[in-house]
Amino acid sequence: QVSACALDWLYHERDFQAYARERKETVNNKFDTIVGTDVVFSPSLVQPLLATLQFLSHGSTVTYLCLQSDRCPTSYQMLKEEASDYGFEIQEIDSRQLRQPPTKGSGKEDADGAAPSFVSWGLALECHLLCLRRTQR
Image (cartoon, rainbow, N blue to C red; front, side, top):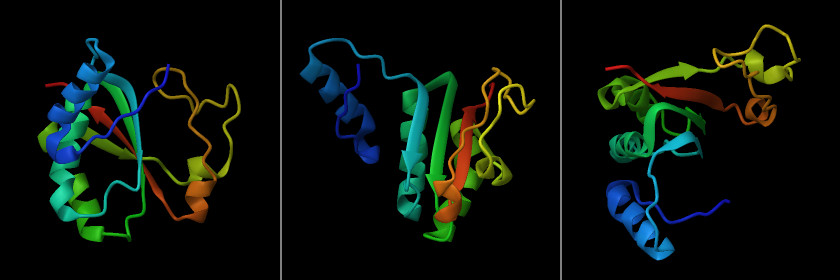
């Protein structure tokens, strides 16, 4: 089942509670996978984005962010520098992985045995694909 709701990074807890009330049920705010695109564009929103990702994630959550670093280089740098303050480590997915679709048994699987994603449009848009994982504290 898929559903969506408004989520303001400055008021993520309030918005999530409103979503749960609307559904008239308890909703877990921890997700296994989070995907965002074009979400790093203003220095004033980097910390609220990281706080929101922290609120929505658990120890095994994998977050993928696709962004264009040249849209706001300051925000991109802030994200990379401040992620650890929110308990995240960032790995930039090598663009060479984006050029060829993975083949089964290629040896490029991650620790969980999953093959890297094939997103050729990322090359055309000169996007960076970041993988954020929670650090063990």
